[in-house]
Image (cartoon, rainbow, N blue to C red):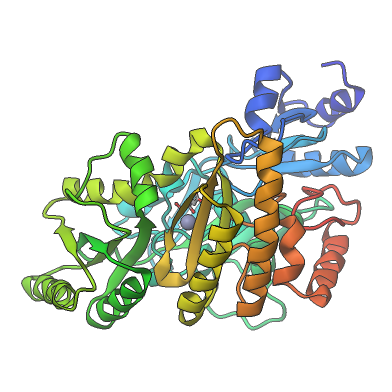
Length: 462
Ligand code: 2HG
Ligand code: ZN
């Protein structure tokens, strides 16, 4: 290790694991965006809170930027290290620390993978209900840093709702224990919620107290084929009024084509413009009959043209794969991603406006729509035309995103629903948040991170 700064780091934390191999720098320096060439100084893998503190103090003394790093499944460039930063990976801090049956709280280190959180909750007869397709790789610390949403927000809300307490190392190296698992705590500003969704720009989440709940009821999964987006909104409203929805997700025919090309099974003989995957409580014959009646009513009205319902866990998984496999099936094409939200009531008008914008902005281009329609969150992935250089493609997409961002501002929506701002959406932050809000964010960052070492350049420029 030739860099004198790294030598001094090892002197202050002799047991700290530090990696500098080219392959490791490449691996830890990027997230799922794959747009930036990784170029970190090194990778530090602390095993204790004290080591995290030592790294932060060293970074302040040396003025080295830190990039906190979890599973790096993010899609906004929030965990990219392309400018000589030290990547602070929480990967080794991956233990479940405690479970309290009375509080129904699971205390975990930040590097625990989401699926391991699900499993630990299940072992105690309970559930941690936040869920995403990246569950096998993303870590709870990253989920908290982005206030990640996912497929069950319609029923259980975002990550924020499930965080009963946080242990955080701030940008000055101070350890804060925020909220300590309390349900009621009216003692001033709730700094826990400030940390959630701050994308590593204020501090590093090292431990979290997660609220658990009753396991979900037995469910069934239905796949629906629909003729139009207007029909889809009507079906959503009918289903929501009659059933307890655990998820209500949509995708288009173009999305289905990518998933099928990636090995999934075609669900219906004919092609249809829109599809819905919905999961709902089906604990008894009555609930199952209500769901079938809702389906038949939609069929009679012409709102739905075909459907399939799961009769086993294996069938449910097969139907879910059509929706959950979309991101993976698109990844080899390096798509340009938009992750936007509006209020559900604004969705039809926003969608009509956006569809017109996108058709004009990307003539003949493969634009893939899908998302969490039940909570107003749309994903719009644009697949580059064959042979187009990436910089030309991104520049064209950014022009359309400018227009999209304007439409969002008119509808009071957000340029990032659940993926975070990171690097990708930084140019559009001011369309979603006011100048006054961003000025306050900068002020808060100055207090918690006076030397600007915490994930600099992400969300906004300091
Ligand atoms: C999903 O909903 C994820 O599947 C990823 O948020 C979305 O790939 C995307 O654009
Ligand atoms: Zn999503």
